[in-house]
Image (cartoon, rainbow, N blue to C red; front, side, top):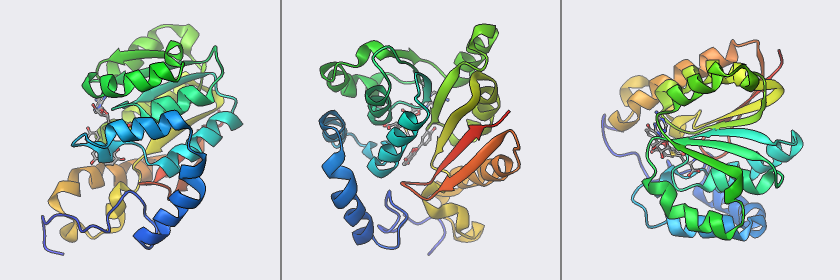
Length: 238
Ligand SMILES: C[S@@+](CC[C@H](N)C(=O)[O-])C[C@H]1O[C@@H](n2cnc3c(N)ncnc32)[C@H](O)[C@@H]1O
Ligand SMILES: O=c1cc(-c2ccc(O)cc2)oc2c(O)c(O)ccc12
């Protein structure tokens, strides 16, 4: 591929061998079990010019499983957009569960909010319109937040993932889970630098560095899962 050209259509949300195989997984195992409000939020997001930023439904289904497995009650999300991952989290946690949801731009959240309200889970969400780092630093000012979160989902600016990770390692309880999205960055992590489309280069570099740092971080048990655009699950072990 020529340098700087548009990625071909095969760089879709899924990283499976073919688009057909990915669609097979979606049609067979994901869409039939997707809660109605999540389908609705996908529908209202579809017209957005950046709709491709939504969490992939197959990755979302896996996250809902993780949330249930750790019995998550207190969670944090960095990068909300229209709220697909936020809504799946809100649906998975109990009635008295809480999500601190951070996004520097509220505009997209307002598109998904009516669906979240109709689903009856808005009371679980504390949406904060802000850059994420200062919010995490503010949470860390209050020692009651140390080791208090069960689950974190990070799906925002790739260059700050390691900064988020350092803070989340203090906020998560031992046994708590952080999930990082886009850790294969549309397959670009395995492309030679000079064949990588210009548009992917900055994210590719940040993701390569993050993946190396996470692999060497013995505070966590790790699993790098090729679902959606790649998700890395980190369980705090001490
Ligand atoms: C990939 S989208 C999130 C998708 C979302 N998880 C979903 O399922 O629809 C990334 C979001 O991160 C937000 N964002 C980017 N940089 C940020 C930052 N430094 N602090 C907070 N939010 C940020 C953007 O405004 C955008 O809405
Ligand atoms: O195409 C994208 C872009 C992003 C993105 C870019 C810059 C930021 O500061 C935040 C997010 O995120 C994406 C994403 O999470 C995804 O699953 C698919 C595509 C993109």
